[in-house]
Image (cartoon, rainbow, N blue to C red; front, side, top):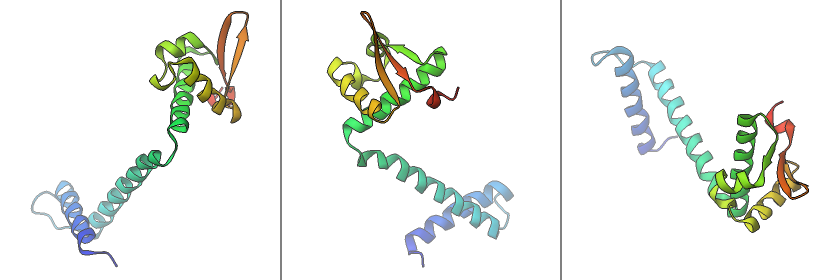
Length: 134
């Protein structure tokens, strides 16, 4: 059984969708109520998804940001190797310090998502090609 507040939200969304579908003088049908419920469910799902970020540690959240940035950068450049100086300049702000980046990169290496490669004096981060979709 839904509480009064939830029913009012359902009714309000049903009216809004009914007006959009049938105009201000149309009849609110069962399909309008079903559509309103789907919209409300979607909003609740998105709110839960966004708020779930609050449940993880700040280090893990920063590592996830770095991971997303590395994958996007690899797709943009067409190479799974990204120079560390590019990450310091253009990457997420949480990894612009060498110590922070090493910590976050260690988390990604542990999960086989990326790794640090050194060639002489140059250092690169290699993104797992399976994550890029090649």
